[in-house]
Length: 201
Image (cartoon, rainbow, N blue to C red; front, side, top):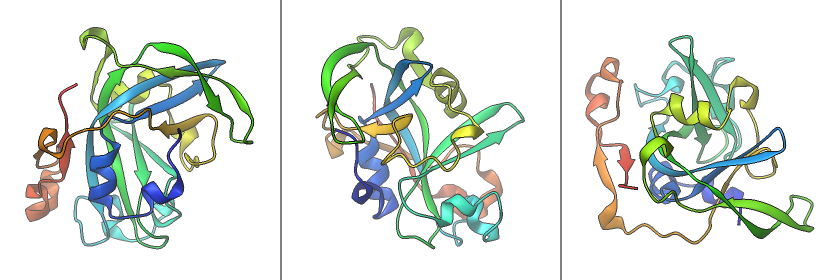
């Protein structure tokens, strides 16, 4: 089942933790690719100096100020794309960065199309080992799922090309590890906030 708008339109940290174990699904050239999300980070509001929105509304950050459930995709180092999912209420810039996961092999199941009709989806199941399926890093994850700036602004609630699905996997709160976010030393004291959440897949 794909995640509804209400999943994203709430506290960013709650949404981030609940994204762990969910399936990020990408339809690309007739194929359904997917990864089970294993690592995320929260970026919350203009007062969070690690957040792109700390400088206010700009053409780049416009998506973050919009409706929850949309993709905010940007490029770092001129070569790596990063996928964020907008959270909270419209007008308040916040998002969850999907930092990593595990690639999933497909199995045939029944699903629901965005038009409401029944159709066959290739819904992923967990990879038995990390191996080559370990997408440890936001750039590696987006490269594996062919996510680029072309997906910036995509509505993950209604899109058939990119969405998040819940296949029933539940993560115990005790199994969620926290650390400060990675690569945000420029954010002063905010760099120390324990807003990186991950699980062992």
